[in-house]
Image: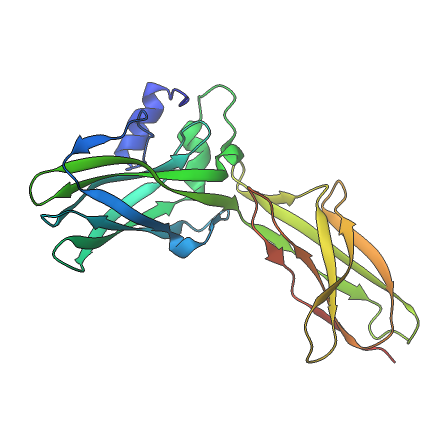
Length: 261
């Protein structure tokens, strides 16, 4: 069920071209169909707190008479039906007499997200993160058309930051090395990064010229901080690595090189 937006919010969304989720339907006339849809090259759409995120939705469309084009594309959450996204336009490239590849350019501006749903009871801008779906209306040269629901699912995730600091530098061989860090993620309500608490993060190490491997794990505290100790046996680099969640991006900190003497 889609959450009802106040009239003022709907008018504002229409005015700036934000996609408001329509009622569920799948109908049309003729045999035109979207046979393949790829969002953002198959990658998650990561949104921070300042810069708008632009991403493509690429649709392969087929019809015996040829494809005329795409008349509408929308994207919105599968929970609640919210879609604070701007459709900037669609271009199509004919690949055969029956097939065209059409690419819609979409944009999410983090500064819009909170305003988009403000006034709705229980609105939480951060709840927009998660699984989204794509709908599109396509038309053929013979005037047949199809309104396609859920032609693709994709993830919109909150951006995250992660730091690493290993001390002391240098450290004596056999000594104790303390590795700290902090995990934060974007908050779309106040447009700042806040601590991401109670998250398991991997501590990784690599020798010079080698590859990182996981040594141990730690959990972020109430302020997003990480802290652990390891025995210093050889020079190398240390870093924290977070695998991400369904709503927050994967992030790996820059390695901190430590010399063991």
